[in-house]
Length: 287
Image (tube, rainbow, N blue to C red):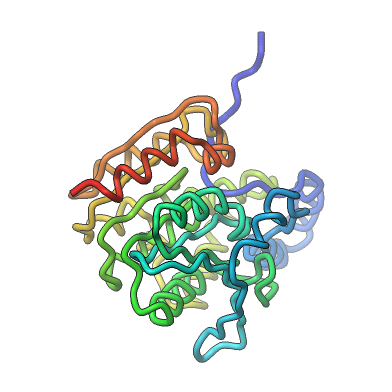
């Protein structure tokens, strides 16, 4: 019998780190925590598929300087005279992973922008975090004179919720494969590298003290409680990176949200599905 895959929230890390972290924790729990915090903040980079390279030829590429920081964000724009849409990718992803959605909306008359988050793709930086992701969205929103619609995948969806809960005048929000709990992402990371719950508590405390924040405040199921923006949550029931139950949880706490479930598309193929694209367009265009 085939073993059922376990649902998770967040992102995966290389398996070889487990042995290294276990040994390091035995030697020094503090060093293990600091090493874990570093790896946790460092996105992985992967080879860019040919389809994304081809899509690059059809958009305008620019760099946007993040105010008050030495970070340059690579942006990709499909220019048009219609309403404006921002696409936000997930952790260890790239803006061009959303090219199919971008091109489809552009053909429908929308002005579409996607980008590589700090330390991702063609943007500068080695480490990043939720605060920088939110600040990036804020800067792009200002540069473009305000987006009408926000579409986010996975961690990018979490950043959009946290931006829109206090800022922005979005008409609608669409998320794909969004996680609902920030603390659970920390928990899954620590478990995946074989560290103890003591290290988990230390790492959360480290980030909270360093950035003067409360980690739980960034959980979408909490962030959306302040939102009235109509929101569509799309999630595949066979997403084994972020459970589809997360979208149910977000919708439960959101005053104005609905969930659409797909099957057999997983966490990434869902970004290039015709039926999903139809649902996105229908939601944007409905009154």
